[in-house]
Each structure stands twice: as C-alpha cells, then as structure tokens.
Length: 116
Image (tube, rainbow, N blue to C red; front, side, top):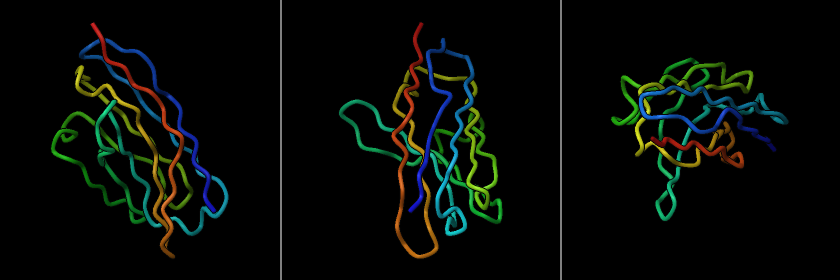
C-alpha cells in the first residue's frame, strides 16, 4: 500500500504561480513513477505530467513550458511548479503513484482555483 498526500493548492490570479507538493508513505520502495493528474467539475481526470524513478519526465502539451514536475519518485516526493496559470487550469489536482507490481494509488487531491 502507498498513501499519498497533496498540498499547496489555493487561489491565484491569472498569470500567477503555485507549487503543489505530494508526499508518499508506505511501500515507497515499490513506486516506479509519480504523476500529477487534474480533474475539472464534470470533466474526466487527465494526466498533467509524470516523473519516473530515473528522473525522466513527461508533460502533456498544455503543461509544456508552464509546468515543471520535479522531485524524487524513488523517495516518494514530487512537486508540480505551475507558472503562468490560466483560468482553464482550475481543477482538483491529484497525485498518483504507479508501482512496480501493478497497483496504482491516488491522493485525495488539492484544489487549484485561478480567478481574476
């Protein structure tokens, strides 16, 4: 079992920045990748970015150039720095962890609201 706890969400004006944090506990040694997803009201949960234990990263197109994922998946810590935020970035952001033996774990999410 892996437990994930996100923090760092909040209210921000367009063009502003936020950094989200995620801390894993439990079977951290089984983690092969950590990810950030987001979900808008009425929308589907979508991948934002990921970082593997070898530190390789992946970004969805909407995140490239504005968001940065960093941390240490092997130690169960991951961050998402978000710059130049737009109203369409408003969502609940979820931390996820993929494990070497299959199970995928989610945190409870942290709300990000971009408003003017």
